[in-house]
Amino acid sequence: MNAVASASSPVLVAGGGIGGLAAALALTRQGFDVKVLEQAVQLGEIGAGIQLGPNAFAAFDALGVGDAARSRSVITDELLLLDAIDETSVVRVPTGREFQDRFGNPYAVIHRADVHKLLLEGAERTGRVELGTGVTVVRVEQDDTGVTVHDSQGRTHRGIALIGADGVKSAVRRQYVGDEARVSGHVVYRAVVDKKDFPAELQWNAASIWVGPDCHLVHYPLRGGEQYNVVVTFHSREKEEWSVREGSRDEVQSYFDGICAKARQLIDLPRDWKRWATADRHPISQWVFGRAALLGDAAHATLQYLAQGACMALEDAVTLGEALRASDNDFTRAFALYQRSRTVRTARVVLSAREMGHIFHAKGLERLVRNELWKGRSPARLFDAMEWLYDWNAGNCLQERRV
Ligand SMILES: Cc1cc2nc3c(=O)[nH]c(=O)nc-3n(C[C@H](O)[C@H](O)[C@H](O)COP(=O)(O)OP(=O)(O)OC[C@H]3O[C@@H](n4cnc5c(N)ncnc54)[C@H](O)[C@@H]3O)c2cc1C
Image (cartoon, rainbow, N blue to C red; front, side, top):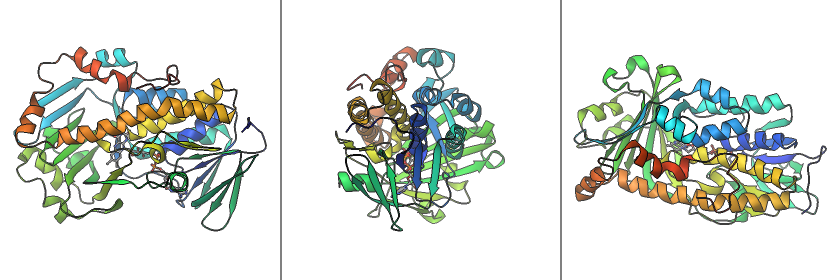
């Protein structure tokens, strides 16, 4: 393939989520026009929070939206891991000045809709991104000069290349890889609660996680502390399939036995819950199929236990842009460099997240071992362990096989 930037033919992006919009921005910065094909009738994000590591802010800066991201985030003071049975503090990672000096950026929490909006605004400002909503990608064809994407209404969309950023149930991945999602059996309930309804004793400026047997509970502030994000996870008694639906108060209340009252009150707060039965995918080493490349959850769907899925999608987008820059916008060379730069690092995230879920949900003796793991560690030693993940930026993203 010898496709270079062309004024007449756009790059197609399947999916207008965080990954797809970040990819669109990265591509415009290399001079391409972009057409985003999104199945939803209206672009947007779900009502829930998201954690952002320093690597996400490095990506936002590279995409030209760093200031907007900082202004809409709550910069945390610390990361807290507490035992949900006896309230022991298992580990406390300060994320103030020392952390920010070490990694060049803060650790923050933000409403997902605000991330999506700032990427959308950035894309709209370029004047080079066409947003096609109500377009469900079903099939891709390739020839010597480009790609033709077929949608569910029988329409076709033509471009020089395709980025498959269509999420954990990606149609692009189904066509080129055909593997199954790996359903975890873990169920997540999420809600956003107004400050006035959130217990004063838990109103900390921290990304906080209470870990218990086969479960955990997360809370952190959003939007200047006016709202709080509540996320609770448990191992389901049912046989689960990957799905998102309205939650049931009765179901969530039937779990979390033995959890201390301070943590358990979190499940009494929300009026409306949304319920996710989660899945990831086993890491694969091929994301590039001729003129099509996978990105975000389509490439490396991960469990949420490192809070890094969206951060990785942002990194993917920046790396794709940098690979194009380094390859004079030749897609063949750029896609190959992108794939080499991303697959090992994201596989480490997927595999580490599975392990972290195991550690979070430990019980019995394993729980007591877990509670000793970080004991007495200085902030500097804690930061050392995070370096592989957070010390990422546009300047070092093309180091091949970087973990
Ligand atoms: C409970 C939970 C907590 C999480 N917490 C964090 C966190 O704290 N930090 C973090 O970094 N990550 C977190 N994540 C992960 C993060 O949500 C995802 O990794 C991220 O949203 C992936 O973005 P994406 O754009 O690749 O996919 P998606 O957000 O799934 O977007 C895909 C888009 O493609 C569209 N689409 C799908 N199929 C088609 C099709 N056939 N044609 C056209 N369009 C299509 C969809 O409508 C959607 O808009 C969490 C995930 C979960 C489940």
